[in-house]
Length: 396
Image (cartoon, rainbow, N blue to C red; front, side, top):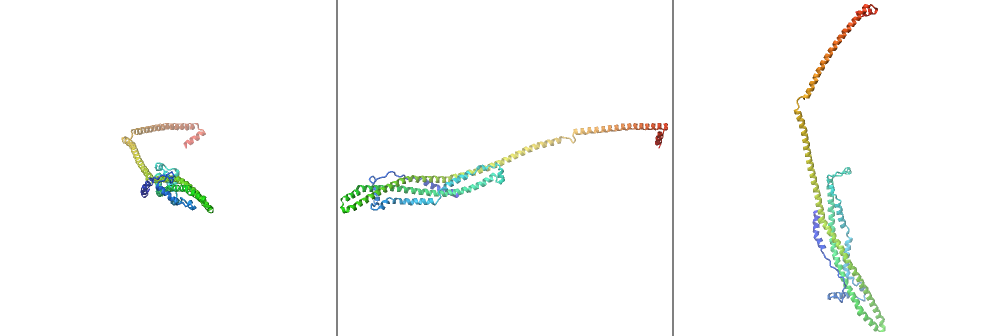
């Protein structure tokens, strides 16, 4: 809510307290006859009796209507005001501001909430960014609604003042009707007690030539008297309806007072409180974000410390093991020496085996040579063709 609207709402608070503190007068219920009235009231009743002209039908028909003239002016002014303004926007604005606030979800502040696949598909902003954008939009709506509420508040304040005037004028009309009713009843009593009996006596004593005319005058007086009685009865009914309208006016006025009080309370208290709570929610969420960032940093530091310590231990173990090792491992030297010895032994064995096989081959060769010689010699001794051939071949 803007500062200008806030100042106007606070300035209107005094006016609200003023109009709601007005106490309306209560109507008197009993009719007072002229015989029971005090001197000032008796004078007022007589003044209204003088308005009656029994010889003028219009005077009787319009008896008491002058009391209603000012009330009609006030009522028509009120009706013109109702026609010129919409009676619903004040309540609508209150409902709109409630709907706007309720439609704003604080849960959207939770930055830890992951966006759904649908939100990602539509490219919707992250929770905090979306919340800030929504807050700015709602803030603009609240400013417009509060400005409308301030206007409705001023209209309702004027309506309440008009209703005060209407109530006072209606109450005056109610009391004025009582005077006209008392004046009418007093006039009827005067006619019944004095005028009509006197006229009846005149008719009874009138000469024959004037009796018809005077009898007609008597009938006219009696007819006017009946018309006046009916008019007084109508005034009594009007007074009863007027008395019933007074609580209705007060009820409408009390409703307007309640509504204007609620509007002012919304402007002065509810909206600033909501804005304060919302600002606190944003601040708390930002603090939570900062705390989460600090926690993540601490977790990262701890993870690094733990990982570095483990890596240092593993690296130190490897380094120390390598430092403590000789240039050649004894096992490798032993294995190499064993392999060397085995190689030498195998070489010696192979050499001995070769020597032995060569000796055996030499013996075999000598044996074969000897056998061949013996065979050749034997062949020569036999002197056969085969022997010749063999010997010849051998000699060749």
